[in-house]
Length: 463
Ligand code: HEM
Image: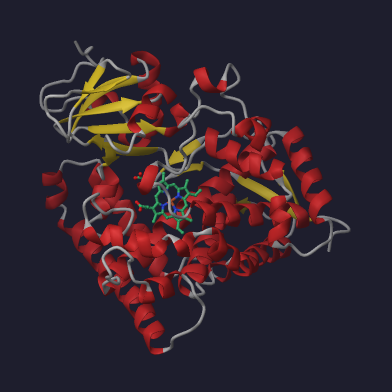
């Protein structure tokens, strides 16, 4: 007999809406798990959602024969913008399979390595900006890392320079899609009938959608008219043929994926770098070790791809930042029912049904004391050094999601973050504006440090 899944009692009509601050839902999912345990149920938007937070339970839902991605909430709302993008596609959508197979090699190690000089180029612009502003300037860290990551993905994916460092405001394209993401986020927290009544917001959303698609369409038309041998992501989509169906990508799928890469590829990596800086600057001993490693390997040299293989502590710091502060806080799956007579049980005791949302809460999973021990809350990069990392139990660390629907851009993100970290610490030294800064988190599209400002100055003798 299956055990009932615990949870706070839902109220008539509103369910468990009052148990959650929707603007800080990821924090609240964690707090509710402290009360109800690693699996509990919430009635939200008229549906029961199962929330899971332990490695044992997450390991069960990572079985791809039994569970599949279930685009819900914010991702479902994003479908109004990019219905054919990899991130937002339904599991059985043909365009997902075609784009996934065509794009896998373009996101593979060889292709990502070729993007190395462009990633260095954009990071160098950030270093120049911080150096020129001088040591008194207060740097808004998440804002500048957003410029870095959006410029990098636009250059590497579609050979387009957004030049965000040279303007106070972000380019129209970026502004428009950020406004749409914000609206999609709001829609996911409101009843659909209420969103439908907000005609001004809806008109603005449609207008932004038109702007974003129009710009992407122009980039594509320009590329068609002026073919290059650049072999970037747009090129892969324009010329790639799916080995399974023999089909290429339709124009609408290419455009939706160009927009998807900009969305998925900038907020998250910017969050990773911002959290890394917040954690390293509040842990002087880690700062010292990181600096020592980077100085020992890079010294005064110009960075090359081979340097990145020699920076195990730097990589461990990034992994540890992804563990403690994963920018993508949640992901969702649902069971695939093959035989309705056979119940699907989590941990052998809790029944879950097809069409039911199961929500995995990364920040809590990444602090499961059964896996990470009594110091799970501490920033300790040593636990993520490769020989320790490889001994961790399966599916205890999921910053990039799971299975075929996991992040196709994870190698891109890690290379970009490694380059940025190595170069920034090679050339500059950093100080917190507020020496007593305590990391606090702002939940928007992804998670980012709140009110996080630093000073940067050129290091003596390195330039
Ligand atoms: C999917 C996290 C960087 C493109 C995902 C998923 C997660 C994730 C958790 C799975 C979402 C789900 O199951 O619903 C991250 C993090 C990043 C990062 C933490 C940086 C630290 C990037 C970059 C790109 C990218 C740089 C593009 C260049 C995508 C795409 C998908 C995806 C296209 C959908 C894949 C599919 O379903 O086929 N990401 N991501 N991401 N990510 Fe990332």
